[in-house]
Image 1 (tube, rainbow over the protein chains, first blue to last red):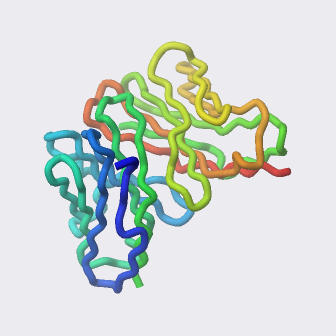
Image 2 (cartoon, rainbow over the protein chains, first blue to last red; image 1 turned 180 degrees about the vertical axis):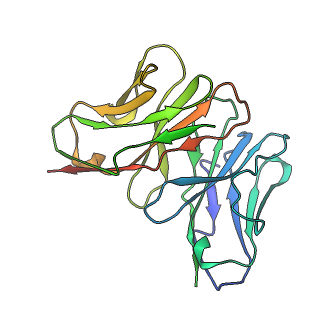
Image 3 (cartoon, rainbow over the protein chains, first blue to last red; image 1 turned 135 degrees about the vertical axis):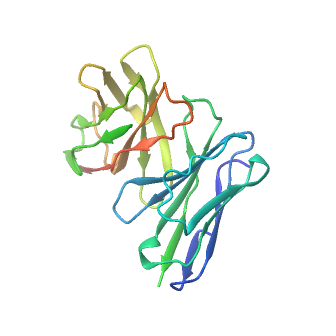
Length: 114
Length: 115
């Protein structure tokens, strides 16, 4: 595709429910990142996939959060038993994979947990 | 560990005046440095990057940034601000020596350019 695509753009859920957020990176980009941006806050790193290497999960805030990347392309971020503090914009980014390559960001998924 | 500081939450500048958005970083090796901008209701966009070479890097929309190794800084600058430059600006760093490390972003600085 022309850019990084994220879906849904908005998600409202009830506390305790599970949610899945999808990211479709730019074709050919081997690196994929998930970040979280809370209202008025900076970007909090969640997880990073690079090619076939084991993902860097060091930013996941709890074991309720998990992510996978199938076939080196599409990624799904899953949040189980959502809590109100999970409300944020979840941003996905991809890059060609080299160290010095810039990130291309999607428009994000606004998650609201009621 | 990598870290980025943006000491100012908010910067206000009059249109036509020069602007500076400050960034300092900490890495164990040599850094790759980036600036991104987030306009209202839009995704983050790349502005410029420093990898190696000239300390003054030029980027999109007339922005430039100066890498200062001794001060571990990478301040974003523009000679003449526009109202349309009003946005949230993020500095980011990656450590060259630690392949596989992710990008670390600063907390962001909100720039307001007043007409």
